[in-house]
Length: 243
Image (tube, rainbow, N blue to C red; front, side):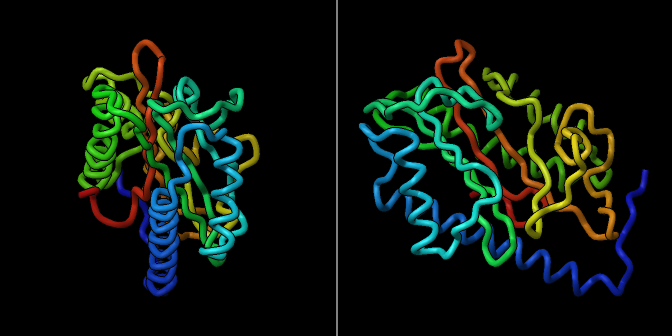
């Protein structure tokens, strides 16, 4: 099955869109670097407290006062829950694993960035965290190497790889659209605009305006005993593989 390609007149528009999304994601990466530099992920702080501090940082230093989705900071057992859940607000412990999922908007362009931090010396938690960029890179390469790959095919590849490595995949999808705020949405649709096991459409299908869709790939790995999990997300359709 061949996917559609944009008309030549759209090439300049597509180039600008790609550059804007890459710039937004670059700024999100800098925000996460600053989160680490300032030591915001620390024992004794509540998830809600860290969320407020991150919001203030994103406003004051990065001019990103708007986030297109809720800020997610999860610690301890809360890290087994996906984005949609609303677990009890927890305090970070000295040996916890913590994940952060943010969707800051930079000059009307959405970023979506997720990373995991390990506090303490627990070897299995560090091993779990180290798996994340490898699984992400494998999923991104799978997308790059298969022009007609569907959302379902990529979901099953990534979740199957998680199982092969000894972890449980922690969500019912493995990513979603990202773009100019607000990105394309269909009311009540939790399948066609997600990297979902029931999405049989090619991910390179064009949107309703005839433009390329851009996707975020999410990796959520969970310990089989559901004691903790880890999370990583970044751009699927643009940029290189993790180092």
